[in-house]
Amino acid sequence: MNPGYDAYLNSEAWQRKRQQVLERDGWQCRCCDAIAQGRYSKADLQVHHRHYDHFGNEPLEDLTTLCPECHDAITAVHRRRRYSAKNLPDLCAEPTLSRSIEVTKYGTEVSNLSVDGACPDHPAQRTNSQSIGSMGKGSQSYLKQAFQDRC
Image (cartoon, rainbow, N blue to C red):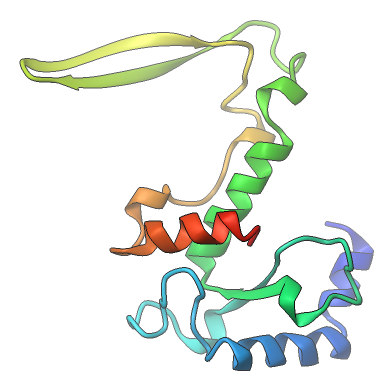
């Protein structure tokens, strides 16, 4: 990561601001209320920068409390936007095939489809997070709102 970023996140100023955000948000994930549901402890909560326009001097409104699962999902969305196939056209010499599964009334059909030069195995297009659909019940609507709010 960026040394300046890491230094700031280890600073007393950031720790105070982080504490303020956690208290403001009631020690709850703003997307899925994970603590209320007992999935994580308070120590697991993370404070997410909605954007980095004022990094180091960000107002509290630019920060939000998330559980690790929601933070990974939101970060993955931003990463996909930043490193989309249109921005990385020359990373793969050949188009990559991906598997498409279609469930029909009479069975399941599996086919391979070309992904116009995208590289799903490239680190910039891979995520270490679960799909949004595998998260807690009701979390999809919270995440949709979070994405709209630029979490």
